[in-house]
Amino acid sequence: MSRLFATPDIAALVAAFPPPSPFRGRPSLVRSASGDTLISSRKVIQDFRELVATCPERVRLSDLPRRLGTLRTDWLLDCYDGPLYLSRDRQSVLPSSVAQSTWDSVRDSVKERPLPLLELVSRGDVALESLEKLVLSNDPQGEDVRRYDDGNKQFLYDVNLARSISNHLANVKTGYSEGIDLTVSYPNIPLGLLKHLGNEALEQTTEHSGSFEIQNQCVYFIPSDYTAGLEAKRKAAYDRAVTEIVDQLGDEGFCRVPSSRKSTGNTAEHGLQPMVDDVKAALQADLGASIVELAVESEGATVLITSAKLSEGLEALRCAVPQGAANVWHQRDGGETNAVLKQRAIGFVEEYIHQPYLLSLLKTSRAAELDPLITDKFAKLEQDDGHKFGSLMAERLLSPMQLYMDGISTVVDPILKEHLEEYVGDYCRQDVIPPVVQILREDRLLIDKSRKRDVEKMQQAVSEAKSLTAIHAALSKLARKQKVDSPSPELLQNIKQQTLQQKVKAMRKMSRGSDLLQNLTWVLLAAKGPGLFISSGRDTTRMIKQFQSVGDAGVAQKLVEVRDKLKAGQESKEDLGMMVEMAVEAVDQDSR
Image (cartoon, rainbow, N blue to C red; front, top):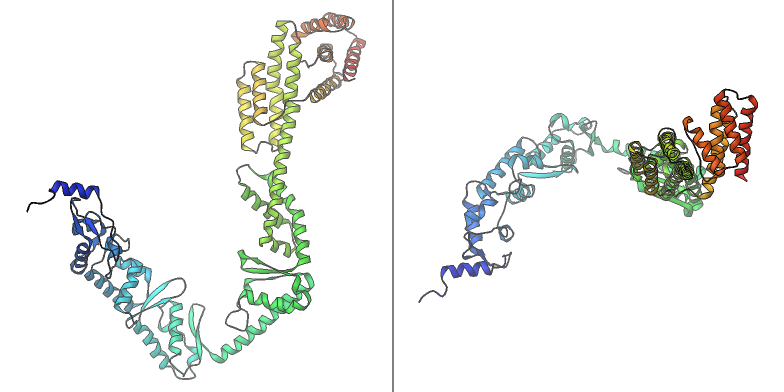
């Protein structure tokens, strides 16, 4: 009878309908190494079992498909029900012969001295769980090798070591056991294991009453009568400690139960919580309901405090924390996270408070109640910095710039307008903007990285600007990015008045007539229009002509007369005084 399917058809079917992966208890078909045919997972598992039993060397997991004639073997280890041992990197299987030699090596090694499990893992290049299975399968009753865990490390040791220690104690005469130091006879044995084996040996004899303890890196035998006396001393010390804490809590409303009390007591070790409970029980009649227990987890201590003292302490900290936040805020460099700034704020408070109970409260969970205060203070300080920055920008940069541009906009003479734009541009670039930036730095208003970056960009744009309009645009862009409002009409008028008053004050100290005439012309023009003026000496005549076009004819005539006298060198002291008075009168009229 001919085959129903040709070989290519079978390969196509296998490729189109991949079988489900097998798992333990449910065998399946799996693809062959070529991927064209299917084979039983039972056969693959049986072949693997024979490979483990007969192979003389470790088998790489990556080699299993080739050795077993199957396309994939990622399902195999989960389905295998026999003993399975893996290498330390879990990339190789240890066949039976290799596993046996590994066990023999482990058993021989621990005969010399106890060894940490992890060291044996490294020596034998075997996975930890595989080593544990090796020990359990080869010595389930611990007849040759036993295991010990000291809390930090796990050891394997030879059972003959335990027998040796038992024999050692059996040879010590009754009454002479107090001087036993096991580390003298067994110097290479870990102290925890040596203490454990010593106490195991004591359980098998009635000749020595006591226990082994670790003291000064030695394992000494401590007789029972000595232990009883020591326990009595511990109990007395513990009771005194409880009394001291009770007295302190009663007198001060606060006490701290530190971790150093831990080993004081009438048992092997009194924990922290029993002492706390004993203190609370002693005070139950008077203060029990009002005592609050707080953990200082970072130090393993507990704080006991009355409700009234707790409220008092938290209020004191609420008052201190904002100041700490302010100091930290003003000392920051701008690169810190909020979490770091909060820690520094708490650190500042710790540095400047001296009451122990406040310092302890800062280390408890109640300190979290201070976080919102610090956050709010930082937010308020950030807002204040923003307001200060905005005020300086508006008063010292935006307002003067706007006023000078408003003044220039009224000038009719195109040559004068061009001169004024150049002069005002240089004046702002050299004498207005740099001092303001310096003030911002000194007042630590450029700590914010975004603000600092925007100011630096403004400075760069101003230094490259070819016109007054470009300088004004750079300042406007900075104001927009930092959300600084444009100067209000009221602010512009105030800045204008302050500037004119400063000019009049400066004029009173001037002795040169040309300086007085120049400043007087600025003041008169400003008083007649919406803006301010400043110009070079070469433009005084043009400035006077500008005033003639907008101002009082009589005042303009006086300016011309004074100018002519100055040119002829015929000005008098009265002329100089007259110019000051004219400026004062103009400013007074403008302020009304």
